[in-house]
Image (cartoon, rainbow, N blue to C red; front, side):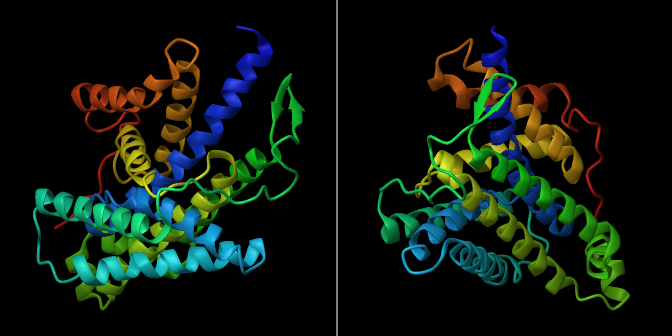
Length: 293
């Protein structure tokens, strides 16, 4: 493989991998606080991108993105308050069915609102023919926006959980919800906040990647599967490992195109997920899932 082609595949893999990493981190934020695996996570990415495209017809691009992220965060809060909060110690199977049902509802609502048209935000800087030479490969400036925005999200989320009082309270809720409640922490509100954060992360990722991949009402399901694969690959509950796992999955998918037809690219995620579940259910990074009462 020529060096230029190698770098092109590598950059493409890193670009998609950062999106998978953000979706995987969204899975982990909710899982850590509630024990729920939210299969509607991919719909947050779709909602962010589609809402920003609609708002951009009336608002400047930066403001449209900010409002789209805020709207999606409100949707995340409403999902938790409406469908999750009233449940008392639900089984894992019940929660999986509920979140899949939520995903279907959001997807069908998006189909009703936006139709089947494929949409995209304009490039933040430059255009589709503008490119930067790196290692012989040509990179769109939007790729740099995607990598930078997702890297910034990772840093901010990590700092939030490690250095802020609210983040520490969420970690306490994740470690032992009953003990956190006895200590006076508002555990219900913290769980709602976990949905808000994961929705906001997904929405921002959807906005940033929209000029490259475009967006449509039905993209959430595929992203949810890949985000779940990343969460399992890194070990459920380990957000930093999810970042490494997302980049790894993106690179594997990108280079698989050189060996397999493009139509088989999505099957790579399923193959990786099945292999992990059979060989190492705790994840390749050996992360231990968060314990709960």
